[in-house]
Image (tube, rainbow, N blue to C red; front, side, top):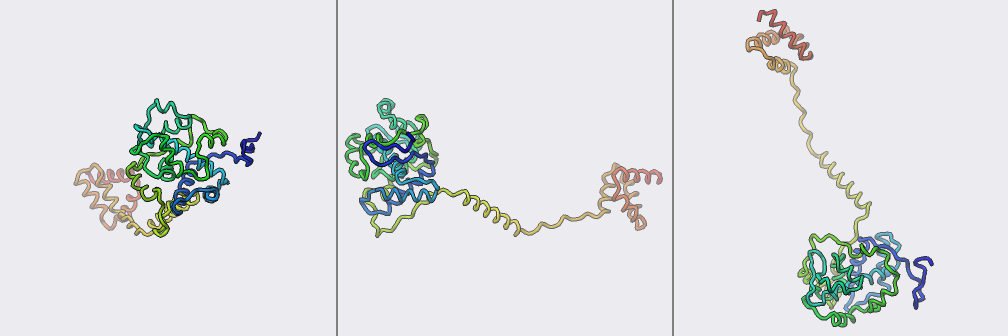
Length: 321
């Protein structure tokens, strides 16, 4: 059967085709939900219509042609990733390395995990900060570690919106991922320079990701601009910068013109550079400096060095020097 056209067992709706998400598109989607939830009332739940609004924003920004169902599936994928991370951090002894964006977990415990969880926790976690702000109501640094089952039961009611909280049931309703198991595109390493520490994340989330949302009377928070610049926008910025630099160059005063040396100065300099005695130079200079020798000076100034030196030696020879 054609991929993307088959129906789920027990589900009468047609499955949406699987698409590949770029990093910018995923970051934009998670940032969109973060900003959208901040503006809502306490106890807000994400539903189908909100995935539809996000798909419209993605299509305007990236011209993806993504559907609400595909957005819902991608959103749920990261929600399930966070459940794996939360379960690992809830166990005593496991910590989070913010510099590498990795969960520090023993190899023996890692070997007992599901394949997907093991792949996720074996490398730097991509979009950890976004998932933490979107799905967590408290710090996930392991300081409040508890039994994994207890952690799941206490937070299950808060995270249960339109979805089935059973991860295995959710995963079974989807086609197997097309990504290479050795290179999970959802958990590829991301740049870790400038990564905020867990302490700063806790402070930031105390107001933005707490269990009780802001009241509307407190004012709307400033939205983050997570949209990447388009190619035309970058070209426009480059043209503007070039025009400003050109305008600054035009405004600079012109440099003074180079001083033009007199032809006689050049002639005296050529005479001075010759290997002659002082008396010989004075005799040649005195002869050429007279008004009657103006024509000779012009001729020698435009002549080659060989011609000039030949004339000087002939003059000295005729003068008995």
